Amino acid sequence: MTNKEIDEIAAEILNKYKILRSLDIKKKNYFLSKLNAFLLNNFSDDEKSIDKIVSRYLDNEIADKYKAATASAINDFISFLSEKKCHPYKVNEGIVKSYIKNEYGSGKTQSFVRVRFSRLNKFYKYLADQKYILAENNPFPSIVLSEIEYHKEFSIPDDNEIQIILNALPLELRTYLAIAIVKQYSERDFYDLSFKTTLLVSKETDGKQITVTYCWTDNDLWNFNIENPKNIIYSNDILFSKKNYSEYVSNPKWYNDILNDFYDNYFKDLNRTNVAGYYKYNQINLKAYDKRIVKEIKQLYEKGQLSNCFKLKDLRLYRIKSLYEETHDLAKIQKLLGHSTPNVTRRFLQNSGITI
View 1 (cartoon, rainbow, N blue to C red):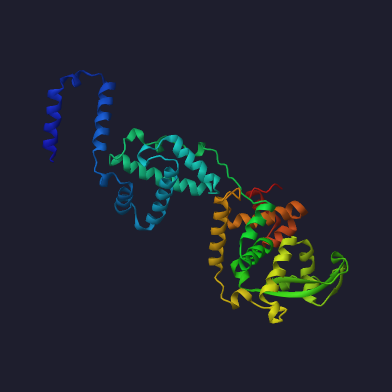
View 2: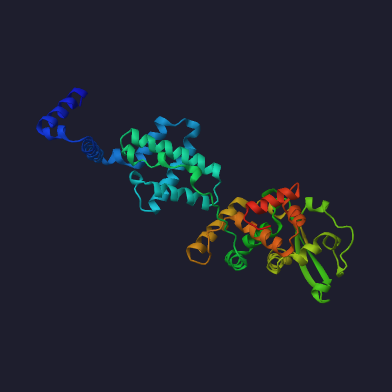
């Protein structure tokens, strides 16, 4: 249809409904908005498909280097709207603010949310420009992001939840996660990780001989204690007595038990007391381990056994939080995390929701 044909239709409507000319300005605007809405609703299903609109928007309006990030922002928002049973064309100010607060609550930073908000704002301006929505129904221009209170929720599991997660995992994943929580090792550390078992008699064992399994990296060997701990009555392992004994007595009992179980099931029958580079030698895919653990946590959460769908970083924070609350030793936390100064550690704890 040409512009001339559209002009003729408009003139025909006005001639047929002359009363429209006598309406006051408010009613004229109302009539035009209703007419606009009716026209929008006459789009074909294909034209109104939000997936098709997003695809056209990305192809025609967004530079290649920003397409992935923009698509992620839009799809995440649409997913949120779906959970709220809100159609993308019927978004209001309250829904957008709820989404922003949800982003903050899930741990997103203010800068991340600001960029995501900007991308959504541009997309909704496009919807209005292309007449998919009325301009006055676009809530984004009226929202001042800085006025929305930034409140980051922290979800650190408690002792019981840590036990639930560990008990749900097979032994090899349970051992990996226990070490990640207690020792705070990185992926690189794990590929340099060795296991060893020793016999121990100490005051903590009431003079009884027990078997202790521990692990270390080559980098740990630089942090050697000079003197043997006074509480050791007997140990057949100088590395353990000089470096790892103090860690052993301060580690959670469940951690020591898991390492002993791991040794009993994987090494004992081989008559080996020293297993060097276990994860590297066996070419274990630690990222696959992480995915399996996250999947198990999600299932536990969906069954109502956990208060949150925890991330792996939340599990690591559990140990930092409990260790600080037990000792209030900032230097110990600093050493465990490998921070350069106590101030870095202090900021890390505060930013993680741990009260100093």
